Length: 441
Image (cartoon, rainbow, N blue to C red; front, side, top):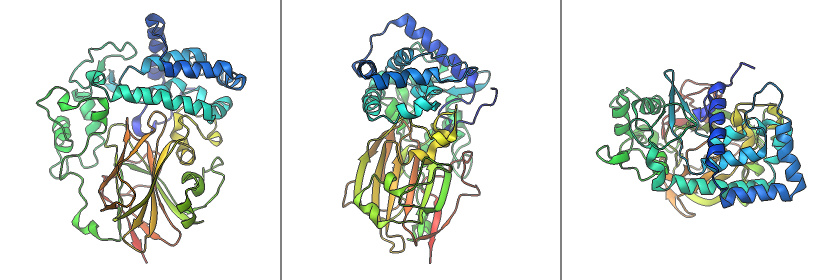
């Protein structure tokens, strides 16, 4: 199979040979290191061996990988060893023949083939599996928030050995900064510099005179904020009828016929509002024919959320969920959760923020931040009763972001502006706080 699907958001390399090479080197690394299992990984291993259903599931998903896919990981024991190794490593870049590879979802990469099997579908919906995975991912998050993760925030080769990468380079290297600048939709326009280093310094809060540009950890770098004056709501968009982009994100889907309850696992992955909103009491104020706008975030850009409207925060909720569930209707998808973005809105770990808009034509709306794979730590930074202006911060993903939705009730008529694009998997970022829609009569 030579065809390789485009990896949405650039979280994983499209080059399957590179990814296999990364995994093979990681397997060799764990064989040489004999690193003891962390308590979190050991707990998942114990759960697999003590539950015959889980043992059958984890064994079957590797047995079911079709011949010819050349999967380097042959069993769940190897899978656990590699995950265990990843928990003490921060993602870095790799230069290969003038291309750049990012394994931004290393655990997703490890599970890439297995999660797409029939057994994988069921395994990664299992509540015990997701409970154990949440503890594992929390441990990795703790490492990424620690100073020990700063070793990848350098200009030049990564000093700490990462034998799984070819020519590993730091995030402050010219090639890495060029990849970040390439995702800036305003690059080279107005005062926004074309030069990659100047572009980064212009856009993001940092101190180039300090080691690691002053960032305290990988997470501090990844959740970096824009400088004051960057990505502000324009004067003409202050109008109450204007809805602005809540994340630096690319439009994926927009529907005006979402139902309260639907078969979200079927073809087309229709939105099921009650499931997305976790049966929240305020969900009853929505109804069939609601509007859902969905957009995805890139691995290399801004990962904070900002309010799309002026209004009052009337309710918030963090919803635990799945981490590696894929839509069965998409078939055997070797490109991770790319094609399952609609499906995971109902299942993945996510945050709900209900906003009562100051514009009566909008009324109650819901912002939904949806974690994908490793990116499932959703931090809400507003509280119930707060009043926000459009563009005000309301929360952030840790270690990146994946996808988000804006949900509007039936009867709210919006003329959307996709900035010359048709929502799909291959769109580009719309700037944060830029106009994405106008409410009409």
